[in-house]
Length: 446
Image 1 (cartoon, rainbow, N blue to C red):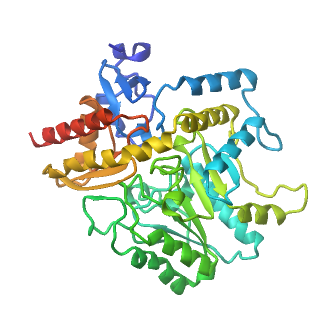
Image 2 (image 1 turned 30 degrees about the vertical axis):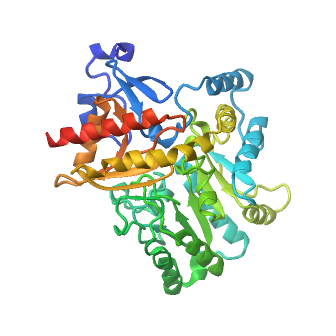
Image 3 (image 1 turned 90 degrees about the vertical axis):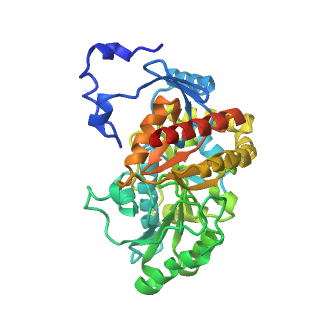
């Protein structure tokens, strides 16, 4: 039995000071759901309940909770050098981690800029795009293309690119000159594992129409998640990403993949770009980079991006006026290096690929439940969409809370539960997640 930390049980208002993100704060503080311990694929709540983690936390802990190797690496680093600013200075760990990350990326993506989150990686990528076109003498490229139902973090650049209305409606002052293509889930391929077979090229041709409407030479970049994650696992149709790459090449537009969720093995390959055999110009990442242990993100760029930006400035001058106080923090780099070692030593990307067929079959077994509207799955990632109860999102919010008390964590967006098990999961762990999901849906009908 785990007690509330620091005597919280005796002080009913003691949760009030923390304003939680993406949370109904008033509702939460009436009946808090606190995790006090985690290890492997399990967590324990403040009432002593045991939960299986069905979403790898927020898709960021594929190697499991409580990895002693990462904790030791961070401790050793903090006792050796706890902080070095990266403005005109450096420390060895950032160069080592960059080398390990580029080894996992497609050929030609040999330069990594470290940030502190996925949201920061998107705003950094936006700046890289602008700096690249300016260095090329093409400052007229002021437009950015994203998609409906897109999620690209919560900084203002990412909010501007977002295609999820609830993430934008409270914040009306966003970047101008952002246009949105249609999202890719047409509803023609319900209960589908892998790439849908309909409309891939036709949907990608939205970008061609924008080139014809605005002028391809005014578009700076296209931002897409290879698989749209936070909006509910929207898998791209066959031919879609290939056609986007083709149009970008024809018009000199940069293609940016947001791999904050899909990077580091979630789809069974190191990055989605390798699975789909489409190489972007810039790739954003975060989450699994440190197995969720220390906040960190990164932006990888093809050689041409780095070289064009750096060579446009005089020798000894700062080429890219951008960075964060905690960029490439030594502790984060130590966590990242230890995580890369775990991925390689335990063959976790291969384990994810091997487990994916069983995972897909297990999740698809929920399709017979009367609450289930659709299931979309690829790799170790699935969106289980339930029918709303008259108010979109209300059932999903209740299900996430009920799942917690039934011993399972699954992250919901609206009425879609995003199931993303850890790579260390066994088949029995997958069965446990699916069984608890079904039990929770049964309760909604009781």
